Length: 275
Image (cartoon, rainbow, N blue to C red):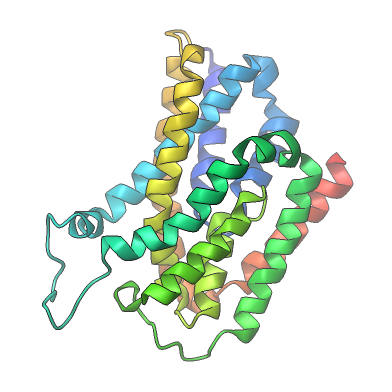
């Protein structure tokens, strides 16, 4: 791996880490940074470039696991959260599964269709704009004083509804975080509670999808590309740690409007510069 390849891996990992869990669409950013600037498909090959994007996504997933380790141990029944009693229940694994089922089923049914027909620059632009509109609607129509202030107060009905709305994120550019946080806010959750639930749900669904994709692309991983993958993985992990910490501290204060405006600007840049 030469210095240029290391730089490309570092930057792409940074873009993945900073955007994967923010409601801004990591897909849209990858189109700009990779497809139009670095073009890793030409630097290596199409198979290696696609596998690299799977590997760095796993770096982002690991960051969530590290930051929410106690929460995941609690969901698995291996550790109690502070203050947890029979009268003060916590988010449970069944609620997470209820939120995962709709998008999981839709993803399995339409995976080939999405890969064949929806992964284009034009569809990502559409997803960016429609996702921004949903976020604006959520901030305007969501309750000013939501009853569900923490992730531990989420009901099964809220979990299912957020899971159904998460299906929108199967459209590239819509953003998983953008759709689920918006859905949570519309269902009476605080922005922070919706964000926490989003990140918790993201780990199993993203990890499962990534590992399946990785198995299909396993032949692309050879000794000469492992350093390239490793730099991207570590970069995505580190920048996802930073991004998630920053996002969770601010989301209740700034809400979704700034991200929606940013998405519309990004969509305009992609449309007028690259289409």
